[in-house]
Image (cartoon, rainbow, N blue to C red; front, side, top):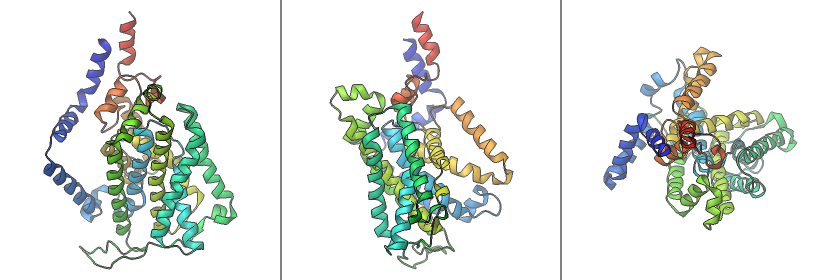
Length: 383
């Protein structure tokens, strides 16, 4: 009884307004949903404007460049990692490896074999998904921290291989990666959204925005399908899922492949925008920050994950003027968030319930970590 009361209390409190919004959204008619979707797309299109950049970016910074080269990339990567961590409950500390596979795929095939951007994009997505299968096939029998250690090692292997391989110029990296071909030179509001080059980073942001929209639709459809239900059962209790006949290995492998494919697409855009890549572009810190964005925003909830990735990418850049202190402030904010709102900025109701019941919000990985009030409730039950 005490356990259920504590779980109910954890579901209320600061998240009450969000719960009310979700309740309205669940019963909203179709036209209202489409209006909201269109408004959000309009906001996304207008985000690079100077009026927004005047207070979102530090003085003298290029706000569209911040959006395209870091913030939008992080949001796309967080959507991919959320498939693995948030939906399937598998902790991946080497997600940057798939990002690197995408980047090096376009670097090799565009510079050595003169493939176009769109050809290498398809190939990079396929190679990244294959890399996810190669990583997952021998390791997904592991669970929890053992799986995390293996994925961390995989990320470092990919980076070290690139660093030591003369085929990709080792630590010097690959230069001369071409931009995507210009699709049209039509202009709207002083912007040519389909003309790619070094002078204007906004077309890259719009390209990433299109990738993000496609990824959201794809992942959302999966989440509402049989695949999503299988991932949820694996996340909550893998042993019970196996007993109920769920082929857990197959669905975990699918999560790794899908998440890797999304990460690889981000690597392709990053490499083509920068026109050069080096192994330090794919440090472990990138994996850690993307994972922090997923957990901070609300693991398993697509809007929350996007918000978390935006905050993780934007905050350090916004306060760059504070020099070394900005990372101290950024770390303090993350610590405070995990203390006072461990379920994240915008969690789903299901994930909040899992956290309140002591699963830590990550399936078996956090099963030993009691949620808020769980230790006291367990002590009461034991009396």
